[in-house]
Amino acid sequence: MNVFGFGTDDIDAKRIIGLARIGYGFRNISDGIMDFGWKITDKDFLKLSGTLDGWKSKPDKSWRSDMFNSNISVGYTHQFRLFEASVKAGYGYSRYNYMPGSLMDSIKLAASNLFMDVRQGEMSGYIRTNPENDVSFYLSGSGEWMIRDGLIVNGTNRNNKEGLVRIGAG
Image 1 (tube, one colour):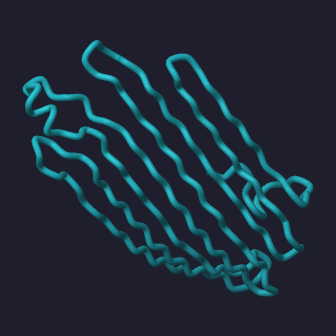
Image 2: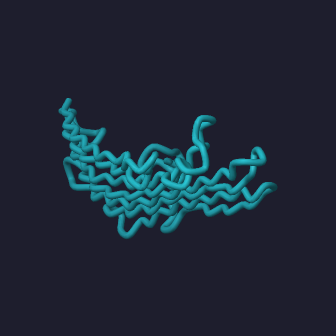
């Protein structure tokens, strides 16, 4: 989500900029978005972003569908004389359920939890030269993680964890 790109839009810079929206629709569908930026000084910028959406519905007689997603992140950028540096952190949570399989009888269904919880996070940062410099470079790095758990099928836990590290330069 990048409603306003720092240093990329041809608009008059204001101290605090942003948007917020929340909605609720038919079939219990809800969503929301927020994206705020605060120009603390001429060299410091703080950004806060978040989203949420979800629903509860009954697409057929035997299955009630539930889904919820949320994500929040905060980033800080400082402009030095020759370069800018930025750090960002974020966290997200999702919960949804799988439709029971056609071969699941009531005993197998009772031994199952078809709701999956997903938690994810990120930490990232970069350093890059200012556009007016003769020499151009950037260095970036990030780490992301994801944990999926809560899903039990026929008494067996179906959980996993993932991690990812990225490093870039140019």
